[in-house]
Image 1 (cartoon, helix red, strand yellow):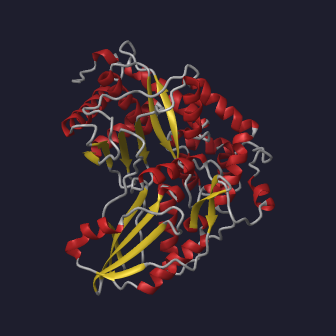
Image 2 (cartoon, helix red, strand yellow; image 1 turned 60 degrees about the horizontal axis):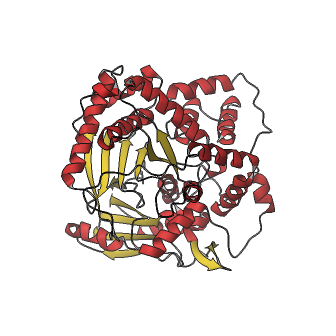
Length: 495
């Protein structure tokens, strides 16, 4: 992470990168754990200090020494997804995207555009195979890819989406499919589906940006490095002194063998083979979003820190426990070469926090801030490897390290502009992870909207239980923002 931060600051210092764009890149890199003020301060300092340019990753050496192979290694996170897919063969790790197009759509150009993107990014034509007793990834040719063009009826859009999103066979490339449905001469819907093992939310942003450029005849920057290079670098990084220091940090957080915080489900998990996800939403008023951002700015924290700390207060009261472990999703793109690459980079951070009724909320918020800053400084260590090591220590083979996940989504898909064609998203993709019993997503969009979504399994929870949790979360948030000096014991929480 220090290496990509340094690169961005060097670009500002040399005049090659605009300060505002640099600030956005740094904030995104840290998943908005750093505030805008923190980032601008770093940029100001960078303009006067002599940055040590010798401190860089060995990524260039990896590329120079890399040779074309039939099979390439995988990341630990990819192996976890592969195992899940082989066991369940469901759509839990599909990432669908649906766009309405209105105007003079050139179907052939859309097909050629996607084919070019698949050619540019090796991840989009990767398949997964057992090779000499180990699962590996294989890069296939681009010739097999083409979009599916059909005609349809707009009133059947929901059925069209349901029939389109289906399970992928991970040994059959591409793990990316596109369907263009023509409703009339000027009305289309563009359906895209991609497997999480080769992509993530940021990858979709990269894909959409390139689609927009190529469709309009603009050539994107040349792709000289690919996901397999990153995987090789990452696996070497984990064995390096820096990588081992990251491992040491995480193992120390769980040196007592602490495993997951068990949730109070309404129904037993025993015998459940497949979960059906449901969700409940709340949209905050724009002026209340502004109030939250002002609170964060005044107190030197970020929205990410505020919203996660409130979730921990909710769990503390609901579960009656003052030692909590929750998952926090992070982008994982900690070197500059990965910034505009399509691939699976996201990692889960196991955040251990200690709410207590005797603590003032403001003190607890600052504790959460320090925990998050330390976690993000060590975010490169893979969650699944950490889980395995803690299981070995605790001698509990079938227990998860975390049962609940928190995701702060600051990255918009962005508005797509295709000349005179009007583009409108149908449903935004909600990032989910089938490993967890309960998930909370916070959407903070560039359009100044703030939404919260609780995602749960109806096989585990009643809807009224989740409604209560959502309402109490909102109530806690309002109380702590109005009275941050209140003891947690004195908060009005009806659980």
